[in-house]
Image (cartoon, rainbow, N blue to C red; front, side, top):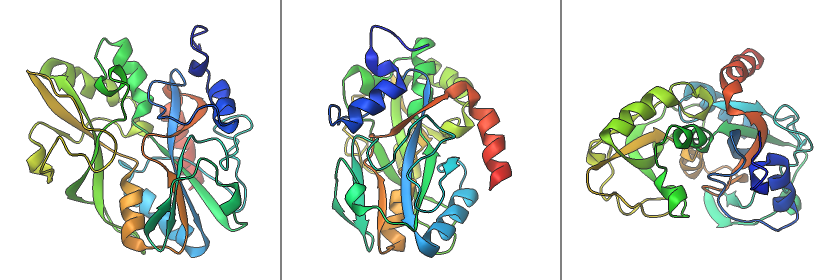
Length: 273
């Protein structure tokens, strides 16, 4: 149930505040145990290629929902969702180049646009916190650090590129418990893809993330890496579609769906696609 002492623990209240321009920050720790979603919006044949990219790369791109062309709602994910207004910050891409980070995309919406909601690791952070595992970027009021790796994704059509990962520093015992917990969240990227030495996956400087904020890693902690829903943004950079819209890293769509429904949703989305 939503925490009555924190109005932003209610996803619908949070989305209303975002739509009214009253909240523009990262959504980590908000929405209670609701699934959060990365967003990709593409038009025309790019949408068909990107759907195949997600299907080929379910770990970084677990599909929560696929919208109908021109329809900014995602009714299976929440009441009255309007993707033109309900994320705190977006990214606008033209020919693969990032050109703007607006807080509303109504002016850019087209009738051929197809929306893809992709699972987000923020969805399992509530479970980590309830298990007594600290989530450092939440504690510090910062955005999670994210890194491009040397690990390739499986290409599909125009889309391909490196795997992007998010990182949370933990004591080794907490990392082991986090693996067990996160295995229950296949729509939030599941268990970590790497623990320990960042150089083994092509990260040269752990203190200089490609997205998000620099981490605080305390003595005795190891970096723990999860597949990340910013991976499609690296694929957009490589594919260079004429127009693409995504979430700004850390600024997610917060759905009405409890994270405990992940397994059932995964079955439903796979059957649809």
